[in-house]
Image (cartoon, rainbow, N blue to C red; front, side, top):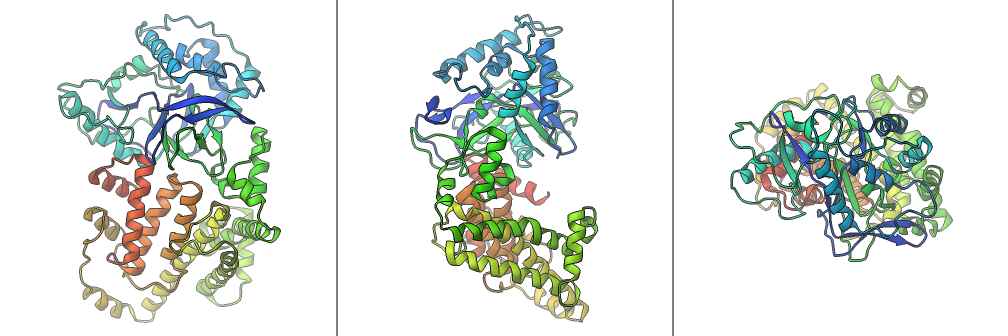
Length: 566
């Protein structure tokens, strides 16, 4: 995914520490604790990387690759003094951590002074700040293995945000209103810098080493004449998958019900926003598990023990471990069948060409062929019936996440994949059914019905009318129709979003799932339906959590359109 920038400029996100303290925690070492109430969408932290490796092909580089490049930078003295200071503070697995009472305010000022030293040095040769270049390879590997963060791609929503931020920066630099005063703003901490100064001011290497910031104020760009529709950023180190070391982010401990979301800007900085209400004195926690966050508690604990050598005792793990044995078995069985049985079967039925590439999918092809019935539609219905029966059994124990106002508990998150597959299968079955009707001569009837349908009204929706229009246009000529009970794509999408909101609100998959729910609701029930309005409101809310609560309607529209264009 290539990020769009204003020509001759790059967007940078400045280091920022919110109302946080680095506090010793019983049984956890140390962690980040809020010193004041924080609200969903509020910026808690911006961490600048010690080093980051980008892969423009969309694969997250391996930690060993990060370690190799970082080791070279340490030995050659390419790290700035601020980067060396942060590296010294990275956890290395020792029981007694150095500087346990580190004051974040003092550290912030120290890092700014070190940054100033780097940026006032010569721009044509090595930094004039002292750097002995020493390296302990084993220690460095432990720091990388225990603290690095990886993703397969940059957040698609950052493209419209960087474009809007560039325009806002130019407005501010020209004497316009201050737009960045609130940590809930998507532009907070943003500055605009010329690309021709980027390598000199920030020390960006060919391998994609971290950017160094110069100053804390918005750079004034007078008479630049640059356009907000600039060229694509160079894919050498700022596009696609990335693996890096962000020390302040790594200070957060793990929880299987995290209360923050984080993503990396193309320049290398990582933004961390609060995803739930956080009280003063409450710990900020992220997730170390990625997609495995949906796994049952036994598998999550095993993964964390193997990788990070600790046993998770978060509230969700404790609650799942306290469930009756039959309930635990139900969650584990549904999760396992989702991963190993239903997903390969549906992949074979819906994407037969791609699925033949793997041995598991070839095995699924044989299983799919053995399903009674004629044609893909009959096979698809058989798989859907199997998933439906499993979910009905689970709903008798954990409740129906589609029913409001049911308080969905995160312990049922392992069911997420089954609801997701059920929604995809329902949507595919609906379209196969429509295709069969067209083949049998019913296409003309549907065409006449579509022509006489009243135009949709956007009254009552709190989302911008243009956003609703974008959703309807994205659906093309699909005819809204009443859904079949509680198992159509929209109803399953609502269940998915309820589970995501309970387990990991504001994550990239939550944003994507909520937009999909909205589109499915429009398709199933029409744009004026109550279901469409509820999903539209949820979509706006989750965008605010991820990107900041002060989103304008125009920026929100661009964010939605960027997702629809994926």
